[in-house]
Length: 444
Image 1 (cartoon, rainbow, N blue to C red):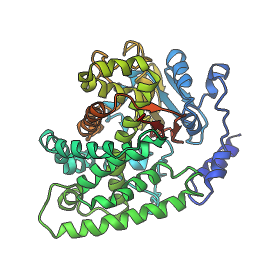
Image 2: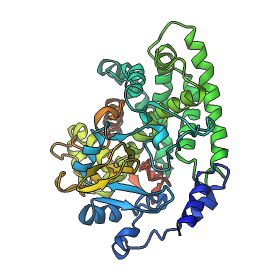
Image 3: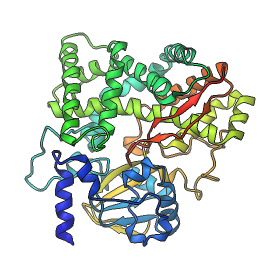
Image 4: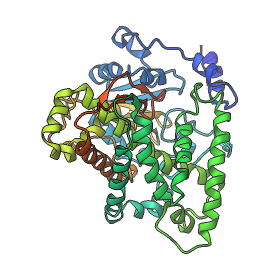
C-alpha cells in the first residue's frame, strides 16, 4: 500500500506526466455524502469538490466532528486540515512554529519539502516572498509595501471609479453575457496594468498569466504542468525586459520599479523574479475579481439582501467585507510545522503539513454568528479570515476592498438589478476559490 502511494506521489510531482493521468490517480465521487464516509477517508482538498461547489458539507462535518483533521493519503500527500476560526488564527499568527518557506513545502497544498542536499529545479521552483520566512520575507515585502499605503491607495480611487463607470456603461442590455470576463476581470486587469505601469492594452496578458498560474494542473487548460510553465516563462521574459530597463531609470511608484531598485529584490535569480511577479499578479487579480463575481452571485442567491441593498445603497461599505468573507477567494494557506507542537489538542510533528482552511473558518458559527447566512448589514463584518493574519496578511487588502466598494457604488447608480441567468462555473482548485463563468442579463 505504501509503495503504491509513493509511486503515485512520484507521478504527481513529475511536471511531464499528463494532468489527466494525474487526476485519474485520485478519483472522487463529488456527489457522495461526506457524512456517509469514514472520517479518516475525508480529503477536503480534492479540486473536483471545489469545481462542483460540493466542499461545504465536508468542512461542516470537520468543524463539528474533527476540527483538526489528518488526511493520511491524498494527491497532495498527508496533511492536517485546520477548519475552525480560532485554530486558524493561531497557526497564522505563529510563524515561528509554522513555516511558509518554499523549500519546506510553501503556502499551498502540492508543494514539496526538499530532501537534505537536494537542489530545487529552477524551471519549476518559483520562490516568492509570501513563501519565505523572516528575515527574507520582511525585507522583500517591505520593498513593495509602499504601493499599498493608505495615501497611495486613496489616490487611485478617482481612476478606479472612472474605469468602473466605463466598463458598466459598455455592458450589453437584454442579452446574456459572462460577468466574470466583462466586468470582474476587466476592472482588475486594468488596475494591475496601472500598478505595474505597463500599457493598458497589455492587461489581457496579465489576466492570461494569472489564469495559467491557477490552472497549471487542470487538463482543460494544459496537457501537463510542463506545458503551463512554458507560458509562465514567457511572462518572465516580458517583465524581465521592463525590470532591466527600470533599473537604469530613476525610481518610480510602480511595482516593477520598486523591485528593480529594492536592495532585497534587485538581484533576484530569474525563478525568484518570476515567482514574485506571479505573486503580485495573482494577488492583485484573482482575489478581487472572484469577490466581485461572488458578490453578485450571493446577492442573486439571497434576493432579500439584494432588496435591502437597493433600498439602502449606503450599506455597500459594510457589504464589501461580508462579500469577501462569504466568497473566501483564497480557500486555504498551508504551512509546515517547524517543531513538534499542538493545534486544537492534536499533536503535530515537525515537518508535517498544516492547512488553514479560510473558507471553512469563515463559516464557523462559534465565532461568526449565523455564519452560513449572507447578511450585508452584518455587525463586525470585517472580522473574517480572508486576508489572513500575522506577517503574511494580504498587502493589497485595502485596495481590493476599495475596488469592490467603487464597482458596487457605480453599479447601483446604473442598474437596480443584474440577474444571474445560469449556473456559475467554478475553478478546479482548492487554493483559489474562483468563479470562471457567471452568466447574467441586464434587462433593458
